[in-house]
Length: 86
Image 1 (cartoon, rainbow, N blue to C red):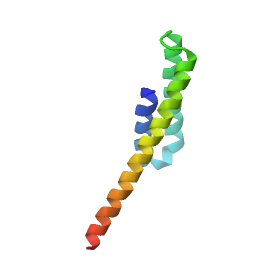
Image 2 (cartoon, rainbow, N blue to C red):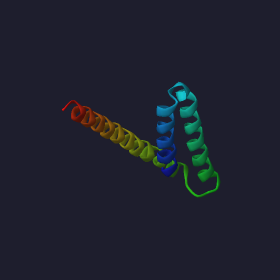
Image 3 (cartoon, one colour):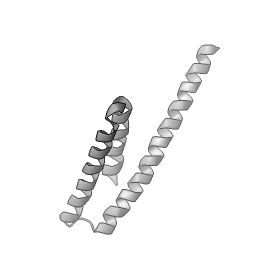
Image 4 (spheres, helix red, strand yellow):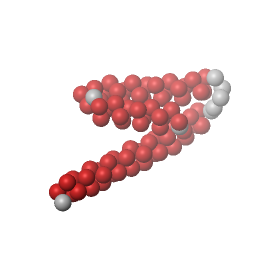
């Protein structure tokens, strides 16, 4: 779950910085998170169901974080724009 959130947020930042490399960034992030999940199963730390649940919960939390950040950024930009006009 933590890797999905952390690397997902890092990928979100990287895509905003380099939009022309979006596909490569997203695929690399997915590969890294899946590899970490596989390593957790291989090392016997978690069961497959635990890893899948972590992916699901991490994806939901990542969606909430990215959406919330986008909302806050739009509100901040809108507020700065209206203050300049006044």
